[in-house]
Image (cartoon, rainbow, N blue to C red; front, side):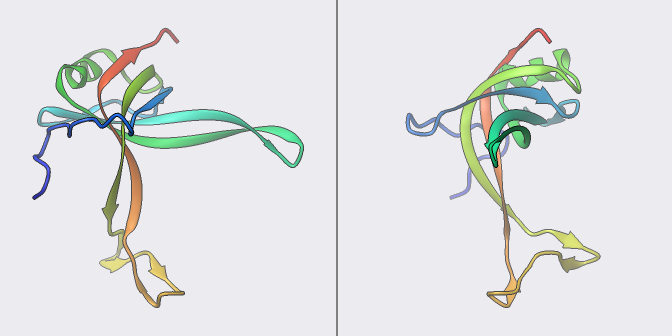
Amino acid sequence: MGKPQNERKPRKDTNVLVVSGRMTRKAEQHGAMATLGLAVHRIKSEKGEWVEATFFLEVKVFGKAAKNCLKYTGKGSPVLLTGDLDIEEYHLKLGGELAYYDEEKKRPVMMKSPVVLTDDVQFLNG
């Protein structure tokens, strides 16, 4: 049984993600849901030196928070959100052909992408 379109699945206590970052684009409306990209920065040690790493997350926002994201945010807006981490699978297509071919398995494979599902977005002063 698939999950209903434009509804947030119930949160489990063992899968809670809290993350802050800046929006990489204006939120887009998809029915009662909004999607946005989030850039998250992290400082890490690499070969004895501190370097900055940036990660990009896809976020699906539901409920009133979706409406507020569409109305009050834009590219570069700093946000803090609490949500669930989910994995979506998809095939990449390039010119009608599958773009990702696993040489070891000798067949095309599905790509997996992390997605954050939330109905809790806080707008930060940036």
